[in-house]
Every structure is written in C-alpha cells, then in structure tokens.
Amino acid sequence: MNPEEFLTQVELERTWREEEIRSLNNIMEKSDDISIYMMRRAVICLLYAHIEGFVKFSFNLYIDGINKMELKCNEVKPILAAAVYYKDFLKMNNPDIKNRIFKKTLPDDSHLHRIFRYEEFFEKLSDVMDGKIFIADGYVNTESNVGKEILQKLLYQVGLSHTSLDQVIGPLTRLKNKRNDISHGVDKAKVEYEEYKAYYDCSINIMTELIMVLFSAYQRKDFLINKD
Image (tube, rainbow, N blue to C red; front, side, top):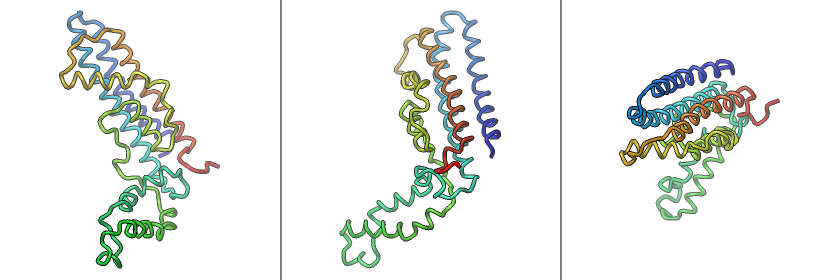
C-alpha cells in the first residue's frame, strides 16, 4: 500500500463519518427548542462513536500498511519490533514456564526460572532481529474509552510523538465523560449550544488532524530507524 492508497482509504473513512455528523447537525439547526436539546444529547453519543471508530480504523490501517512492507525488525523503530514479540515478552514473565533441568529439584526458585526464560529469548535474538514485521490484530486497542491519554498511548505505540494531536484533543476527555454519563443514564441535563459546538468541532478536528499525522508519517516512513 503506497502513501496515496493509504490517504485515499482514510479520507473515504472520514468522509462518510463527517457526512453523517454534518447531516444531523443541519437537521438540528432547523428543529424547535425542545427537540434540539434532546437531539444534542443523542448526537453527542454519535460524535464520540465516530471518533472511536475512526481512530481504530486509522491506526489499524497504518499498522496493516507496515505489515505489508515485509520489513525486518532491525529496520523499524524498537517500539514496533517490540510489538511483534509482545507475546514472547509475556512468556518471559510467566512463572509457570520453568527450566526443564531444575523443574523438579528447584521448582520454587523464581530467579533461576526467570533467567532460563530470558536465556531462551536471547538464544533466538538474531532470528528475532532478522524476523519480518507482522504486528498482530489487537495491538491497537482503544479500550472502548478513547480519551486524551488513550490517543497519546496509541501514537506512542506506533512510534510517533505522543503529543502530535495535543492541539485538537482538549475537549475529548469532556466529550468522553459526557457520552458515558448520557449512555449510562446518569446525565439528564440540557446541552447548551456552546458545549455541543465544542464537542462537534472536536470530532471534526481530531479526524482531520489524525489523517495529517498518520499520512505524513506513512509518507516519510517514520516507522523506519534509518529513512535514507
């Protein structure tokens, strides 16, 4: 997948989401006062859903593009190489995996068995670094709770600056909390225009800025250690 194909796919994903958001916004502007207050509450939940869906789609597409390049672990940023062997690292810290020689004679020697698990990993270290990059599904996890911290975490996980979206995600945590309170039936307050507008702008801006950040990184091959 070349950069132009990447951009086309994320733009198509954004387009249908924005069209739905803008259409509902236009309907609300023609509604009476009672209806508009109810609709704002419903649309707030939709705004958040579109942010979460677009974030998940975009980061997964970015990872999928890297996977298809068949790069080696020694060519990419360490965070991405670590993602490939995430399950191996979990295995290294699994106390149930023990050294076969001392499994019966020293079953409770945690230090010994931990060293054994590390030894196994280092025995195949050269193979690890020469291995092809393939990051499994699930590496990008929004935890169904996309706020500022989750977005920063996802950026870090793909080797980008965690502050890349800081200029546009200011209202996101408030939107997330508002959506949760409405969805769980604990918030019955009217949503005034200024509050709604901040959430509306936030959803549009995050999708727009995220495209710019990921496309730019994909085009420049920021996932590589050496881009020359």
